Image 1 (cartoon, one colour):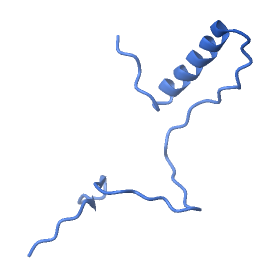
Image 2 (cartoon, one colour; image 1 turned 30 degrees about the vertical axis):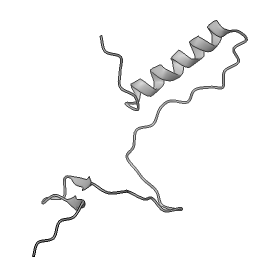
Image 3 (tube, helix red, strand yellow; image 1 turned 180 degrees about the horizontal axis):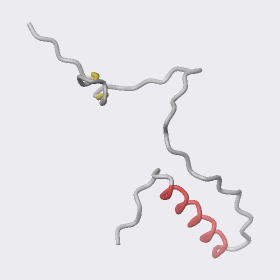
Image 4 (cartoon, rainbow, N blue to C red; image 1 turned 90 degrees about the horizontal axis):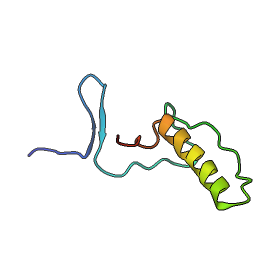
Length: 72
């Protein structure tokens, strides 16, 4: 009788596969994830200003690798 698991670490420890649910309990921490630069609260007074602020946020997310860059 064999045993199959959804979650495993490949030999050598370089890759861990999560095929089920990864639950992070309260108080736990995760390190090594990318972070985006801070985006200040918008002070826009019109739609054009809001678009500028929003596009700045999108650019920071893309630069940090948290969002796929635009296709050219």
